[in-house]
Length: 276
Image 1 (cartoon, rainbow, N blue to C red):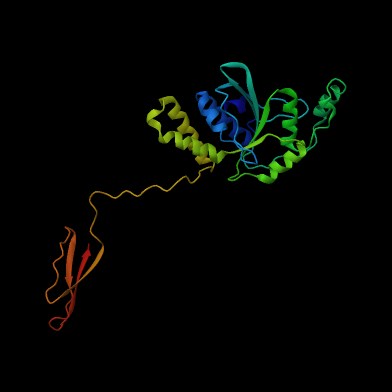
Image 2 (image 1 turned 135 degrees about the vertical axis):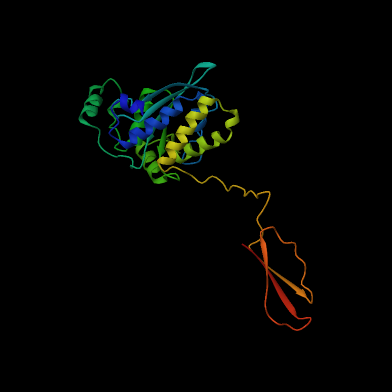
């Protein structure tokens, strides 16, 4: 929660949550965060194009986008073999609250008016939809940009994304990720703990515990049942014999209770084995 403290955002549970999760991910090697972000997908199911990028150039928390406000984070991706290959991701995170739709503040509106005449894009009124507003401002400031909507939903909030795409007036790209996916990511990595460095294992364990505390546990798969080597005897057995009772090996904890009844020779006589 260090970033929330530094930016004065501790009064909001959503900001504290974002700071804790992304702050822990930032302590891991870049490949971890790249792998998690690579799970983001568009409305049509297209995944984030992470393959050309292998470095996290920067992560800025609550940066100011001119005329649009403060998204939760901006992540800069870069290819280590090409200084010109970069991609900027705007991250807007939700932890139970819906996305906002409101007019820009007086300060934001004044900033936009100050650039009228010098920047054609700033002459266009910013959309009220939060995601559309961030994406349009990001397109103005960065060469290649996308937006990740990181939310508390178990499945893609299609209506939210469709509204934002309609408001921005172009093909996004708007990607979606879930905090539940981050929990799955952390647990999957911990299951291969033999290949993890000790520091990475401790960070992932802290992240897993925190997400469980916040209610982001997700069912992953059925675990196979393991049978113990020495099983206790069956709790209830019934053996039928004709004439002479059938001999059944008794476990060390079994008792015999013959029925005290008179039966004709050759009739069915039950024998009970019942454990203590």
